[in-house]
Picture 1: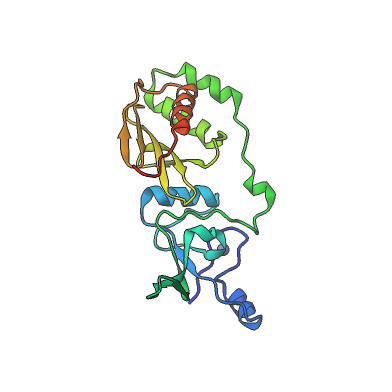
Picture 2: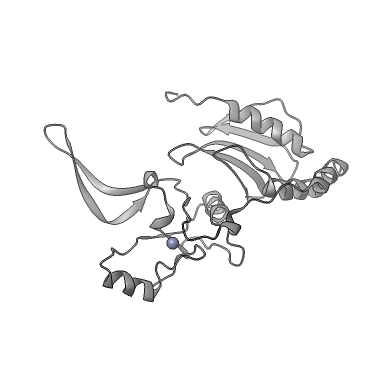
Length: 223
Ligand SMILES: [Zn+2]
């Protein structure tokens, strides 16, 4: 049985591609199941940007081509008596914690473009501050199209708007969570909650201010 890679325009995992690879002597690609963690699943779905199908946790798979080398364990490492490290290539790769697909070599350019922010949507946000769910939905629509600072992503998970920052190891180290119930904001850095003086957000400017503050926080390697 074979299962195709979930990434559009990628043919890994389908029978004819496996046959082709075999004939060409190309090693079979490792397929990774979509994560069961709801937040990480949203991040994968957001990275893949597939609109016709929903990414199903534990069912759909993404092939190794879409993961950066820093996201996969390619070797078994054995420390030798003299202190040197002996590497043995794994038959099947394994994914590091919080790994997110980031390489889409077969995707046409048009699919990876980010839409500009709609100005009228921005205006609508400030005029609906009394209505929490309407404001929430407007903020969500705006954030989907907003260009974020480098390494930041946006997703909706657990009925919240989540802005997250991935470090160079693709670890989620900064989080801004906006609750759909009351539009209150929670900020955490390296899983520690940070208290910031902030009323519920009412417009995208509020979010941008928080984002700037949190983005400017320098990460210390020893904490
Ligand atoms: Zn693929």
